[in-house]
Amino acid sequence: MKPHFLRRQGLWCLLLGLSTMGYAQSKGGRWQFENLGLDTAVWDARADNGTLQQQASFSAMPPVPEGGAYLWLDSANVHDYFLVDDSDDLDFTNENIGISAWIYPVRFDRVHFIITKGDQFPTPKTTNYSLRLADGRKLEFLIRDANDRAQRVTSSFTIPLQQWTFVAAFYDFNARKVYLWNNPRQAVDTLNFNQAIFANDDPLAIGTWFRSDPAAPSINDFDGRIDDVRLSGRLADILPQPTAVAEGSIAAAATVPSTLQVFPNPVFAAGEGNDGMVQFTSNLESITAIAVYNVLGQTVFSASHKAAVQPFRFMWNLRNEQGEFLQTGIYWVRITNGRNLLTKKFYVIR
Image (tube, rainbow, N blue to C red):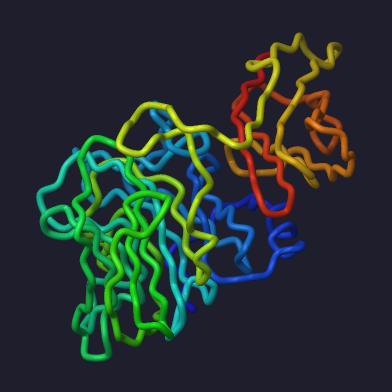
């Protein structure tokens, strides 16, 4: 496989270990965007971390459908997207494949790609799989066949502008059916689709169709916000738990089943002579590990957790694994029980 861009340093080593603990593997990944582009899926074989391209950015401006941030692709910019290097973990060949995401389109004037694995520049073009907004703001699942022809199925529903909508597609290869969602509860469309799918050596792009042309590295860019992108061969992996975004509304209305709290936040510490303490609490059950990382994605602290007492409560003295006191900055805490992950941003001020 050929890499297209250098990977970020400081990968989340804890997640690599947890991804193989007590959970059967599939392929794919999950990108939640409050963690600098890390692949947070617990079902895949490796961490397929990604990077922002051009003017793409992470944003936490409310409302946020999941976690603490999302991918922001401003319609004023061109060639802004999120790129993940090619890997076997992202390739699907004549097998089930599922894709889901929360999307918030702010503008629609042509076809816009939500996620695609392939390259638009060469002849023939390549598309292992793709989810996009097609004509009429319909949701569309698409592949390219052996004759370089686009093969697609299109939803009966329309995606609204200026609000968060859950979208998903699942191709049941053996049943020759594609199921399409516009809410997390149930599939809306069941469509016939009898096509082979082919792996390729090209990257996965979120928010565009990648082009291996430095002068114009993308086409049909998405305009708006994207969050919690999931890719897997198993249906259960791509369907989320209820989130803080109620269907049909950008207001927080639905119940969030698990939370992670940081107190105090921000954490004010006088300096080396005063070990400030921070407390992490959660109602997530059976937590097995906790870790803290900085804005570069580097782990500054990690620990296993075996206590069965509920709710979870962990006190930390703001010392990293070398015993050094944290500097002023932004940090993230992450807890996991081997299947579920919760992440929370907090601030340290000295």
